[in-house]
Image 1 (cartoon, rainbow, N blue to C red):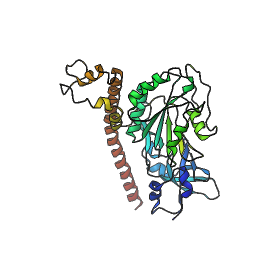
Image 2: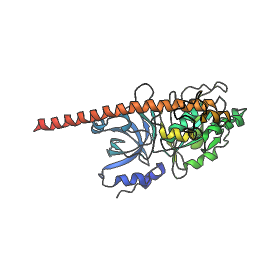
Image 3: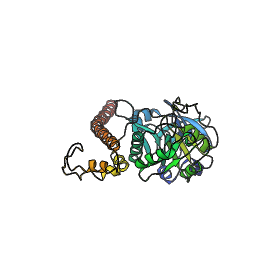
Image 4: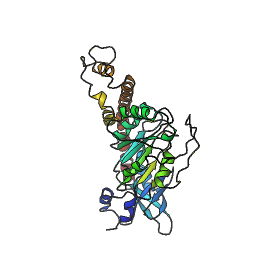
Length: 357
């Protein structure tokens, strides 16, 4: 059997090794570093090559989420005399971070795959959007990943403790770190998340300092950093694509673009775990059909009056709950259309084979 130890530093493990059993020997694995529209940059351990999907792959793919994403392991046919390859398949993903694509169309967009931890970065030199953080946490948990909240630019903040306390109210039991990548404060605490060649994805709005943090963790300038106003924190988008970067001491990090629009993909499990303080009171109201508005004996209103959470947090919960319901309705309809498309393709193949006879 081929030895893949050279791939271990870039995230290879038994989960992927087991998938190689029984496969053609001329297929080689590699990990996607950059995903462009028609081609990919792929690491094969000691070096990088370019690749594109095969015609068969294109024909069989039914949706965009089946195509390679940054962090994916793919199986390729490599041409010995060239630094390029044909991608035949995407290996089974250990994990993925997905969202619904921006716009009205229901379509899964994979932000990163085969990741272990997600850094949610917010900047302390601007108003922290707690509702957006709640949305991020719900999305990450629903993808069965671990969120870690990073409060950046501590060197530019005058009310750090106040903002930290606000974030603690919504973070549950998940880790929070206050850092300054520019001053190298708190950065060593983040390095533990890469132990064992783990992969960390980084999300956050534009201008929160993602590129500076990544450069610090890498020990060199690998990402472009824009000049950003100390007050308005309005920086142009310096990252136009997701990119996988390998750290010198092991582990890897995936950068993502600034999130202009973040729609949940599924979300039921994530919602429950992101809002445990609210969910524990559901079903405890005097009336089973309580709308938590003007009804007497409302457990939610009583909890708000006691200060266990505020009304804005509850409204955020209700908003996400409505989005999930709409998603589920659309998802059921899409599943029916996908099944219809599948049978249509099978019928075409049968008619084609019969015509050849």
